[in-house]
Length: 70
Image 1: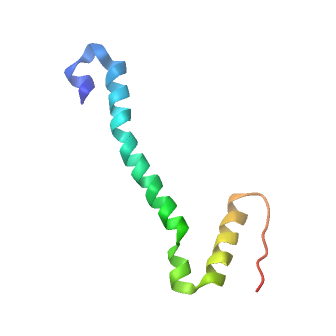
Image 2: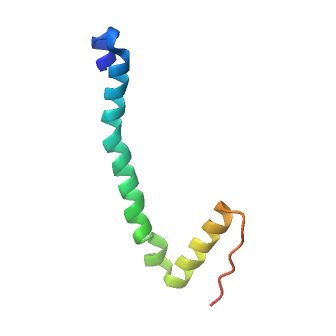
Image 3: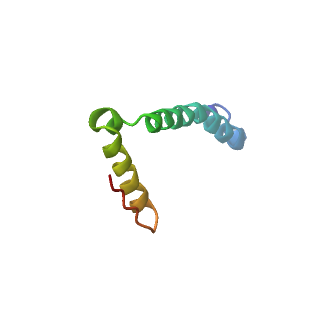
């Protein structure tokens, strides 16, 4: 947008566009953080199911297994 108005200032235009996108990225990260603070599985299925789900996600994301027993 800014780069189209002032084609000689492409670098400044790119920096401006990145600055405009920063709030959107921050909002998305805030939503993720707030969701992680109280995931829907905790409300829907209870603490044990929420911990089990979390352990499964960690096991899939990293190279180790977590066994959760109640």
